[in-house]
Length: 316
Image 1 (cartoon, rainbow, N blue to C red):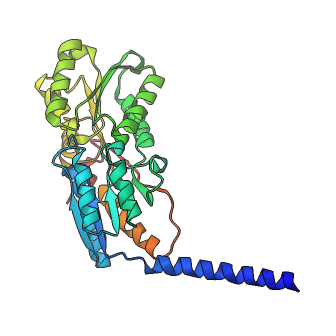
Image 2: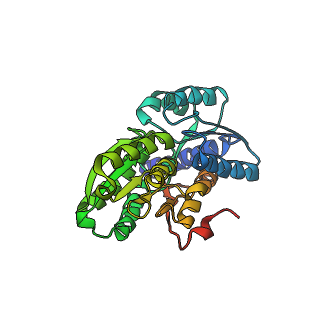
């Protein structure tokens, strides 16, 4: 008899605990969302616009900011502190260098702020986050690299160089590795990998140096881990009169690069879905506050943009 009473009491206690947990979740506020991107380039702005659209639909306040350039990674520390002071309920952030912002992110989490990594794919790097959302950078890079191989006349006798984004930025690390793995696996020689800090000017200078060092016939392709850098690569290749000899590729799906692909001055690029990243991030956050179970990572995918389909990706 006592055993049955004890079991009933335990069961009742569990129900009370579960109800209390659900009540706490339902009582959590979702009135303000903060967004911190890496810079204000076209891709980052599109993420913000997607988040703003979702916030407007939900009738919540949104604060969005970013450093002037991706090289100003430390500025994100101050911005996180501002978001804490501004009492946001959810913080969407695209970390430039995670180790730089780990401590202020911990403080945000300790204040009850739900942290979501956008344009990011590795939840395990910071498991205190609610979830990560963005392009699966490594797999997307592999898909794009496989298409790049098709554009080369003789992959096993080809040399390619890679212009990557800021050293330490996880998305650029993964993209670079994806490109390297496919290229080297196919017998392509990766002659150099250099950081252009997402700057078109730096990418142009790197390209000019490579062409001078290896000659137009000694470098067969240049891969960029972002479209911002691809603009500089394209400019230098055009100036060298090497459009027909050096294959070029971007990564993001920015309008200027899509137009270049359509015109034939850029070989191809990959389009992420930045607006979807921002929009879905806010909507999934709303699902969390509604008590729904979330995944730890959402892959928003990538599209290969070539001369044949470029027109369909341009904004109307």
